[in-house]
Amino acid sequence: MYGLAYVLLPRTFTSLQAELDRTLAPFKRGGEEEFPREKLAFDDATGPLTRLHGATVAFNRDGSLSLRDGDPTPSYDLRLSSLAEHLAACRLDTFEGKLAEIEPDFDRFVRSFTDYQHRDPQTGRYGRWLNPIGYWDWWELGGRFSGVITGERRPAGAEQGISSGPSAGRAVLGKVVEALGGRTRDEEATIEANIELVETLKLADERQTGLPTAIVLPLGCYADVDRWFDRIGWHEIRPGTRAVLGAPADAGFQQLAHAAYERFSDIAAAGVAYHF
Image 1 (cartoon, rainbow, N blue to C red):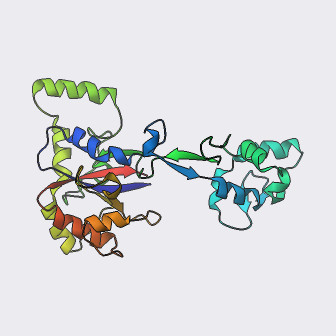
Image 2 (cartoon, rainbow, N blue to C red; image 1 turned 60 degrees about the horizontal axis):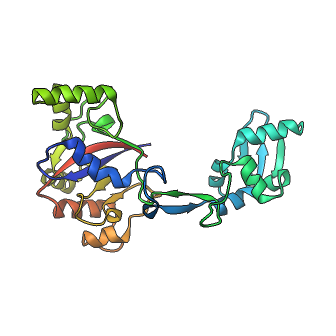
Image 3 (tube, helix red, strand yellow; image 1 turned 180 degrees about the vertical axis):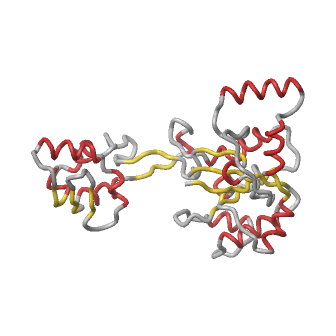
C-alpha cells in the first residue's frame, strides 16, 4: 500500500536528498540488519501461532485454505506449500479439522509449517526484533502523488531523482550535475512541484481541501517516537505526539495536522510517496 507523507523541513537546505534521508531514517521498517538492538522491540508471534495451531481450517483441492473460526490474521504465518506437501505425502488432497491434528506438538508445528524456525534466545518466544516506529520500506519525492502538495498534480517519472532507493545511474548523473554546478531540469521541476510552505498547507487545511496520509515533524524538534503520525486505521497515534503538539488526549489526525501546521508555519514541507 502507498501513502502520501508531508515531511516538515527547514526552508533552506544544501541537499534535499540528505535532508529527507535524515528526517525519515528513524521510520524505516526493519530489524537487526538495519538497526542496533537497543532501537528494536520484540514482536511476539507466540500468541498468534498458538491460536493458529488450534484453529479449524479447510484445505481445498486447489491449494487454498479457509479458516473456519477465529481471527484470520494468524493464518498469514502459515506456510501453505509445506502444508500441501505434508498432506500430499499423507495421500490427502483435502483436509478439514484443527491444524493441531496434523502436528500435535506445537514447536514441531511451528518449525514445520511456518517461517519461524526457533525461539528467540533472549525471550524464549517466537517472534522478531523490529523497529517499533517502522512505517515505510520505500519512499520517493512526489511519486504517484507528484504535485499534490502544491496543487499542481503532474505525472510521476519512471524513476524519481530523490528517493530511498539506491540507483547507480542516478548516482552517476548526480555527480555529473554536481560537477556542472546544477540540477537536471526534471529534478528541478520535481522539487518545485513537491515542496510547499507549511503556511500554505495551513490555509488549505482551514479550507478542508484534503489531508495527507501521514505527517512527519521536523528532525530534532521532539523524540523520534513522537514525530510521525498518520491516519492509517491500525496505527496508534501516540500520546506523546498529542502532548508535544498541545492537542487534547483524544485529538484525531485532522486536529493534529492543524496543530502541526500552526506550530511549524514558518518552515517548508515535502510531499513524499511511501510504501507501507
